[in-house]
Structures are given as structure tokens and as C-alpha cells.
Length: 571
Image (cartoon, rainbow, N blue to C red; front, side, top):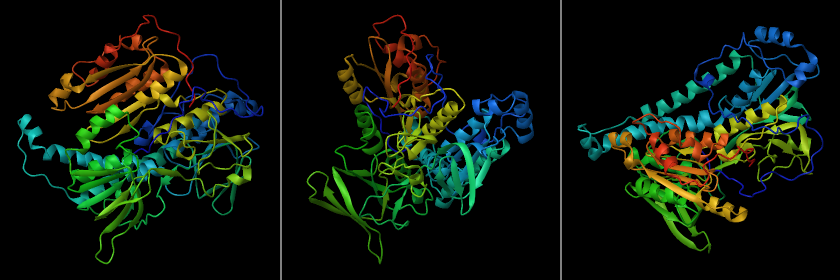
């Protein structure tokens, strides 16, 4: 599950702030090799043999100990480095979600003595209340849709009796998956010697943390990775039974006959897919004038035709839910709507349940940020393009970083992990700036939606400001052999690019396995690959990857020779 993303489209993407000379490195003049990480392979139960591998020294450790000493100690401690004399840890991470986990594994790989603080359960939102259990529910909804589609089955020559489901069995599948991944994450960190410190983490001052009620630890560098919680607007009363957030919905304690979903972003769309497949009627309540406002408009229009219109879904757009009262004493859930612009009363709905899918809010209260003079902005921790925390005076806080949902740059689990890895690169002496425009996002409906980079309106706005042309290329899944063999020809891939130099500005896909297909485009953007080069890549036939092959080949680029790969843009 993902929340909406927010990208700055200003041509000046770096923050302009006064910076003390705290960095011991200078930006590299060479192209930056970007690395990305969602759930690392260790989280799925596979462990790398770190015991016999020489660990790369970071400047801090290198000054204190010889390379030979570090290799010996790494072998004795399971791969984790040893602490420097003046600190308990080289790196301390607050929050053991996907972002913190990715940072911890990379830190150990770099030879840092690493600790991670967790006040709840390992895995954070993604593993326990987000991406992982939601995919289990969506796997069920996908199977149900196939079994319920008589037309689809008949076209394949199949006959199946009426499909049914066991609600508790579906809920158990989601819970068991979350438990398995959570255990694997925990074991992957323990196996390489990461210290897991249980308790709430509080910043006491520079490079000093309190864990729980009385344990004090110090670290050369600290990463805040505390994630987010569901955002519930004022006037909405959540009882966890009939008025719920995504946290409650993932437990699937009931399947209501009629459920209202407030918000039509990633979270709302995915749950509409689950509930309608299991027999519910759904009503969307959207504050903006159109459904799916965060998607490319053309893709959103097609997705609405396929994912909304044919299903038992109706919707109200341009309205706010100002008050939602849970069901009680035999009365239904009551939702009061007002016009989003005039604020005049619009309608009152009576439904069996309501899901609040209005996004997520950063979980940063109680961190002790005031002890290092940091003031949050709408709850988010302010950071620069290198995830370095900025204090209330606009200065960088030495040795303090913030990644993931807590900084608000891009509220996706794999973005948090990528930011964490970027921070580790920096504290081990290699400057690194993450290009957020190369990070893909996906909505796991049936069919799926995926995207990377700019939407068409965003690209045209940028082009107007910077003075270049924008071109569009499209290809249909109906022309793909593998999609037709699956009888899943409904879909579109869209490329937004610069015809003068072949730069890829954005790619958007709606169709079968769109979430898997997007990575060819995201990696091309990350590596600075131009269309005139990627056109020459070979794709196996017949595969869905040929959708992207045809898309790139259909682009008309004026430049025949590749331009030098530029530095990634910080967002």
C-alpha cells in the first residue's frame, strides 16, 4: 500500500539554506551509481555470507583501527563492525520499518557498528499494517475476480462452479504473511549482528538517545525512520468497527454490504478492489473534482473506465466528509457531506461502514526533536536533499538524518529504504544524492497501475519553465501476444519524453503486471539512459516486457547520438 507522493517541480530542486562546514566530503564529479531497496532479499529468508568478506572501511573506523583488525572483528561479530571508543554505535536508527531495515543492512555491509530502536514491532507500517498484508488481500481479490468472470473463463475454455470464500481464512492469510515477513526481517538483522533495542527512542541531544525509560546510548550518526500513521480528518469518529482506517481494514473482521471509502488514492483504490471482489458495494467520497487525482489524467480516465464504472461502485466528487458517526443502537454509519468549494451542505449518506483513506501523517511526536532545536512542518521533519535534518534556524543538525514517511519527500516504503541507503553512503565517505524522480510507485488493483517520473501536466509545466519540447508515445496491451494469451488485453503504457535529446521524463502503465513492468523505465531514469539507447535493448518474446519495448521504439527522438549522462536531480 502506498500513500500519495508529492514531488517538487521547481527547476531549482535543492534547498537553499545556510550550511556550516560539517561535511567531510565533496560532491563527486562522476555520475552517481544509484542503489534502491524495498524489502531486501534477506527479509525473505536468504542471508548473504558476510563472515568471510572484507568489509569496506568508513573514514571514522579507518582512523581508529586497521583494516585487518576490522575484518577479524567482523568475523567474530557476525558481520557488524565494532563501536568506536567514544560512541556506543557508528550508526543508530530510530524505527525498524522497511526504511530502517534497509539502512541497517547497508550499514553493516559498510562496516558500521549498527543499532536499531523499535518501540512497537519490527517491520513498521509496511510489513504489519500496509504493503504486505494488503497484498495478501489483493491476491485473494484477484483470484476471486478470475473465478467470478464467466466471460473471461469461457474465453479460455474453462468452466468453474460458483466461487466462494472464508472471511476468516482470508484474514488469516494476510496476518500469517505479515508475521512471516516480520520474523524474517528480525532474523536478517540478528544474523549479521545488528543490535535491536526495544523501547521508545527519544533524542536527548546531539548524538545521544534514550531508549525506553532509562537506557542512554550514543552514536556517531543517527537516522530518524519512524514512519507514519493513518491521517483522520477532524469530525470523523473512528470506532475501529464500523468507521475504520486501513489499519483496521487489513484485519478484515467483517465484509460490509455497503462501505463508503473516503479518498480515492492508492489506499482507497486498493481496498475498493478487495471489497467489491468479496461482494461489497462501494461509494467513494473524494474532495477533488475527479477520482484518482494523483495519477496521470489519461491513465486515471482509463483506470476509472475499467476499475470503477463496471463494478458496484458509485462516487461523490468535490465534497468533504465533515462528520462521520459510527453505527450504534441499530442505526447505520452517518456521513455528512459539504461542497468542497462553497462549504454548503450537499448530502447525507447512511452506510454499513466507512473506511478513512485520506492519506497518512508522519509519526514524529515525542521524538525529542526540541532537544536539537528542530521544529516539524505539519509533523514532517525538515531535511535537505541528502536527508540531513534542518533545525529551526535553517542550519543543518550535525550527524542527524531523517528518512521515509517522517520527512514527507515520498511516502513509499521502498523510497524510505533508498533514502536510508543513501544516508549510509554519505556517512561512510561517499557523497550521494537520491533522484526521487526515478523511484517507481504502483497501485495493486486488477489490473495494476504503475508510474515513475512526471505526469503529462507536470512535464508540460516543467517544459514551459525550462524551454524544451515534450512528446508522448503510447502502446496498447492489445498488441501484446502474452497479454492476449492471458485474455488480458485491457491496458496502456505511456511515455513522456524530450524529443530533442531522448530524456525520459515519465512512464505510466495500466495493465497486467504493470507494477513489475515499470522497473525497466525507473532504472533507465536512474541511470540516465536515453531512449535512443534503450531502443536497442532485446526483450524475450512473447513477454509482457515487449509492451515497454514497443513503447520505447515508437518514440521519435531527433538526436541520434546519446548525450552524456547528467547528474541525478535531487527532489
